[in-house]
Each structure stands twice: as structure tokens, then as C-alpha cells.
Length: 66
Image 1: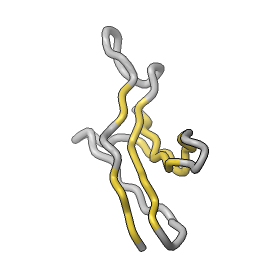
Image 2: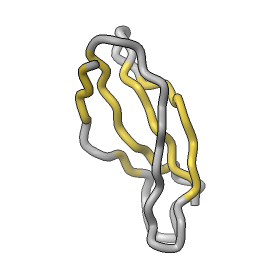
Image 3: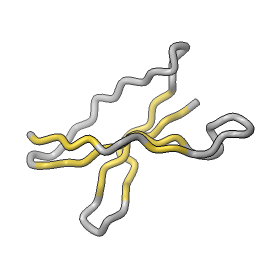
């Protein structure tokens, strides 16, 4: 399965900045290059990546300050 790291945009939308595959323990590690300042991130998994009977999902927002 592939999950996406997304950044919150000023217009209220989300943009995917990185994609990574889940390993056998259902974890993924991201090393994004982020601009200085405040950035809000979340992880998303699309409807085509989840199994039958499941829906797409998003993590809670995480605010990063550099």
C-alpha cells in the first residue's frame, strides 16, 4: 500500500509532497524538505489503496515549526 504525505495550502486545500510504501509492519518513514516557518502536515491513504470494505482515510494534522 502507498500512503501520501500532504501539506496544507493557504487556499485551504492539501497538496501531496511525498509518497511512500508501507512496510510489513504497516509503517512508512518520510524525510520531507520543508520551508522555514509553520507547516501543517497529514498522512493520507486513498480509496484505491485500501482493501475491500474500507474507505480512504487521513491522519490528524501535525503542525511543524522550523
